[in-house]
Image (tube, rainbow, N blue to C red):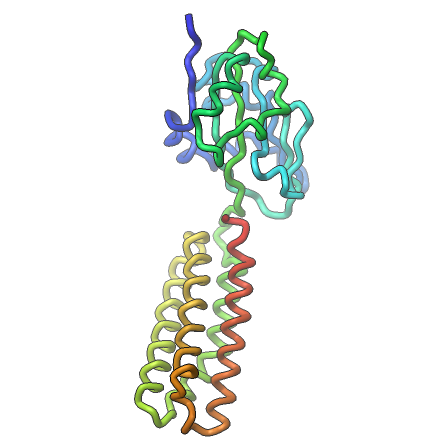
Length: 265
């Protein structure tokens, strides 16, 4: 009888909805070291529901693209993966089960970003003589888990708001009505995003980080546009200086937000 093929396409709802519990059950909280092993996976309810009573020697762990991340390490035979970073991670996995000797052929039918031969070439289960059911478990997501506290992205935005709010209000003194409109839009947008960050900053970490990136991009464009149009030509040197200070703060904010969003990419 041909053994079945199981993939994340069939179990994505289970893994996505239980990834937090999945990680909690499989992680050893020893200082900052967190380990997931095939021994633990073979006993886990989720893996058992996928592959039945499979032995740990027929499961292979892979870091996927995270093999380039210094916070993650793996045993050469894929028996365990270890996270040594500072923050507890929210994880997702891609799981594929098939006859060990057919796994290499089966991989080509799935998206390269989820699984490819480079991810699992270290797995001893891929031997062509292996007639048993084997599973490869590939790490596809590792991002800091929200702990109910404000993130660095939130703190960055709150500090930015304090720094630029009064300069923006000062810029409303400009004579040009079009400049007043630009600065009024910037001020209202700043206050609106501030409210969103305050209300949802602790529960929508990824979303507010993306919003932070979008916010600074829009604000920089609203600062540069009047300069290109020459709307500040009739304004005082003091007003022009304040505009430059606000623009510099926005550029620094954009750079910082790019750094904050990198772990989610």
